[in-house]
Length: 557
Image (cartoon, rainbow, N blue to C red; front, top):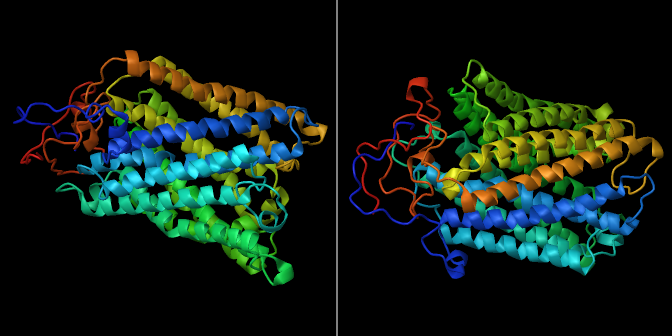
């Protein structure tokens, strides 16, 4: 695909790009262009990201001293619950699929749009409605159940706004399902001629697998929350053991969704990294076929490991053994991906541009999180560290360190394509390095604190753990500054940045063959694909040039 260029002069005068094809507010709020909807999602999740970040900033300040100093225990519970609900369902889950997936999938497969453009816009409005419920929950006083809504606390004892918080997650879940259906249909139906399944970029494969997980698992979450509402609001005996219910049933249902949800966040991140590393190493991606099979394996096995969250819940020891074994098994395809990324770097002509720094940061943080996950797959170790900060550190390395690093990597890699502007590279490199060190400074001490027995969810703790919490809080300050930096220099680039060429990185994806920013229908000429992705060859590198030639193409107008 790297040699695809628009040949000769176009038979039509140039059209305005998608950003300039209508500038009114109504043109944005009623758009069905997948690229504009991606921008709407990006703005929405940015707001949620900083709301969730503000909540956890207060929590980290509270933990700076052992006995707390400015939050009550109730306020502390409500802040970390709000942080979890917002960050998981309103940022991490939709972050890469709904923004970059929306923007890139049609471009990467040579399509003019997604399969169901109106459903795509409807999904964004559903996300907004869910966000309104979440914000109302906060304004009305908050919820204190944590992001897990564990019963019987959520159904019988909590006196906070459980119903509106559950409604927020319920509604945004339907947005995920609609988006997943759209991406599955788009990948099946709208691929350009010659774009066979094993010529798909790995980012497309990752979003396709993620979409299947979203469509199959999210209804289980919706049902779980409906049952919570049914017992809490209507008094139905579902989880109350005094009336024949089973509170552990909720945990089974919740984790049947929520463990695959980890891969909803991680698989798209893996897809992003698989695009960036070959580009900045100037190498073919090592073991493309194995990378595809690894994506499928992760998505499939991810449905069968939920029980490792419940080793101490009283489930059968035989079931725990099986879930432990499967949790070790799922590490194999993840290890394959890390090995192949590393092999792709071998003898590469590596350039450490900011997207590459974020991608390498992802590999480091994801590997640390993955290795710590092996400890949690082991029943004796898991029993020792259950509900401690060891678990907090593990899932933040996977879900935040991994996914957010990849999100920023994607943002910097495709920013010139999305906006048509370049950003100050030195600032971007500084932010990437600062983010990596700030993240490790925040969460690495939590492994030690958790292993030594510091429990999670408490706003006070024994003085012996203060040194770890001071390090974490100081790291969180560094991390917060690193997250703010891109907001500043990327905004600056919109106003003062240099105009981006169509293919500033010399990348091989089909999305780089159209203009920056792309026209409303993505391509003026129907692309034809005659080779697989990642065909990087030293003699063909053309960074900074506009792209390639389409042969035997037909006009899309």
